[in-house]
Image (tube, rainbow, N blue to C red; front, side):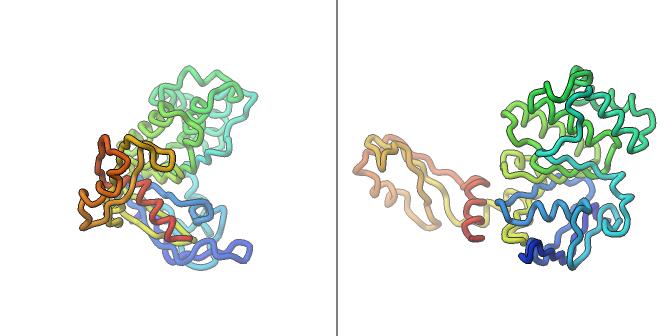
Length: 285
């Protein structure tokens, strides 16, 4: 049985279709990335998964439960919204974690807190006040709060917004650790850097799923390479320019176009995921 099963879901918000016939499934132990531009429907989809929004049509199953009828499934789900805090700013982190553990009726919650903190190398944060933490430190604590009840499914909405490279790397590394323990991860983000380790990407646009597959498959949907040229003379004020090399095009023909500017060096590469997403997003407009 899939951990998440979404079938033919439709939802209108404010008279406008936010989700249009959306269907997908997530297997146990998968790390899924959901990406899409603002207004693409990913936030509505996320809120439908956790039962905040009820679809107008279609069905959603989370761990075998219908979010509309059975809220008990939430005891097996951990949800982290990057722009909202589950911690009280003026009491110690450990106090908030103990309170959350009490709400979930976690047995031996203090032992559980110590284990998570040790695994995340965050023991030193337990007696600190959230209001005094850096963003990276606070997000570690938010993740600890999300995991206190040992959920099977972890859903994260933009958890790395504002984090520096090191903090973001630590955060994603720990998500991979959780996946290795059999947890199912669903990560919603604008940043493709967060998605490099995802098993599968779901790209949303105009309330629909426009792509569902691996990052390798995503790159294959475009039919070009990228050629970057380093010029002796500027072109439109730039000494480094990039252009597309379409399938069948001859590199020498492209070089001739720029030869008057003096080519110091050039490189040809496959498009990045960011390039591919830009291509998909242009098609959504």
